[in-house]
Structure formats: C-alpha cells, structure tokens
Image (cartoon, rainbow, N blue to C red; front, side, top):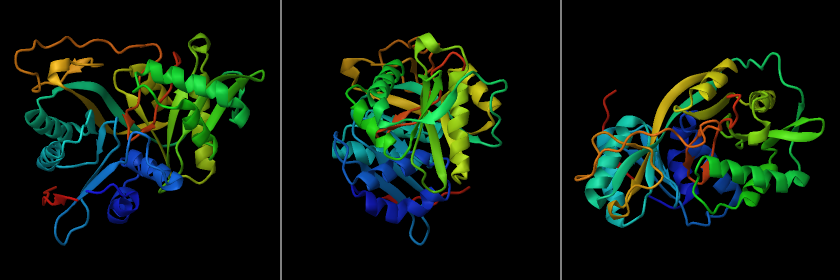
Length: 341
C-alpha cells in the first residue's frame, strides 16, 4: 500500500489503462491529483494493488478519506483480506464501491472486524457510449462552454445537486467548479442567453472521459435540457478524439437509464455502493439493508424510495470526485491471489 500517487500509477497504471471504462474513477481521480500535485483537504489517499509473483497486476483499490473505498474487479477472498488488513490499521472507511461479489466479501470482513452496520446506499450501472443519437427533436437553446463569469451560478447549482443526491457535506463547490473550468470541463445549455442546464466531464485520460455531473434546476425540468446538454458534452468529447465516453446511473431511476440508452449509451457493468456505520450510532443515510449483513438484534428495515425521485440520484461519490447523470424530469477465470501492496 502507498499514499504516493506516482508510485501507484507506476505499479498499477498499465492495469488501469487496459480497461479505462471500468477503471474510470481511479484513472480520473489520480489524474486530478497528479495535475494538482496536492492531497485532498481530508487527507492523503491510500492506494494498493494485487500482484502474484511473476504475474501482472490483477486488481487495485483507492481510498480517499471521507469517501468510499473504490475497488476494481477483484476476487472475493482478496477483497475480504484487504478489508481485514485495513481494519487492522485503524483507518476509517465509510463504505466500499465494487462489484457485488467483491463488495459483499469486503463488507462481511469489515463488519466482522469493526462491528459496523452495513447497508446498500446505491446500486449503479456503468454505461459506455456507442453511436451517439442526439434528441430529435431537441429542445430550444444551444450549448456553450462555461466561463469564469458563470462561477457563482455553477457553484450554486453544484451545491444544489450535491444536496439532492446526498453527497457528503462540506465540499468547496467553488473550488470544484474552478478546477473544471480550468480544462473546459463544464458545458451550459442556454435558452435566449439564459443558462437552464449544465453538464460536466472529467479530464481525458487513457482515451476516456466520464460525463457528469448533469443538473437542471427543478423549475426548469421537463423540457429535455438534460438530454440535450448530455448529448452536447458527449459529442464534444468525440470531436476531441476521445475513444470512450462513459457515465454512471442509479439503477433505482429507470427513466434516466432509459434516456441514456436512447442517446446511444450501452451497459458495461453493475456496481454497488455499501455504506458502513458504527452500530452504536445506527444507520445513517441508508435506504436498503444488505442481505446477509443484517446486524444481530436489529429488524430488517423496509426498502424505501430514493430521495428526490424526480431529480434522480445517479453516480457514486468516490475518491473525492463525482460522475453523475442528469438530474432532470426528462431523464432524461482462475485467480492466483497476491498480496495488496
């Protein structure tokens, strides 16, 4: 394990770049950290990778304090061993983002070591753009790149979106906006010169960008702006020579999933975000208990509908970075175990 981004990329970079879509979050977060050369305010990240003797890297993880641990494709026993190792260090982890098998194994080992309650916070689907199909007919208006003069408006919109999707509080939205403006990572949809919707994208890395966040204020929803601005950002990425454009959706929102497929996005994989909460404090911000992880002596809670259903809650918040889809009513083989390093 290491807190050095450069060391992590030197060891696991080839593994991550071999499948940039599935490893999108780790690639884009490490790229941001590499460019900024500054650790997140909450503290330095922690990275690790699995590599059996004489074999290439087979899995990797990344954890930024205050955000869930992001785990690549990994075998269940390896995920469980990682959780036990991390629990032994005393590092506080609030959740894990992984495929179902790896997430379950990690969570079971983490619960056994810490006593934390485990719950499903979000189930996600990764989509990759095939052939872009813009909305026809599209809404009125045109896209443009955001500028410095939009900073206050965008900071407010980013903050409103963060509230709707129940992101961890305290992030400096102006800093997030400024960072994206620095590389042309925000596009606004305007009608008559008035901004009505916004879509972001990550930096391009390994020939890939991830779309998000996308946000339309509640009073402006229902006009197709989210789909139009998503299509505009997607086309701009293709025009810039990007090979893969990806995004995440919340599986609890079938309308947004349908919208992206109409735009030409195709499913790649599903992931689950499990939250960990000290049992004595009860379950926070959870909507579904995981099967098999119900704390002893507690009743199984009912699954409840996601908050702000009309806005939609889409992408995980991992490693200090977001990747989201529209908040709009127009929704829009055998494994030789190695040791984590």
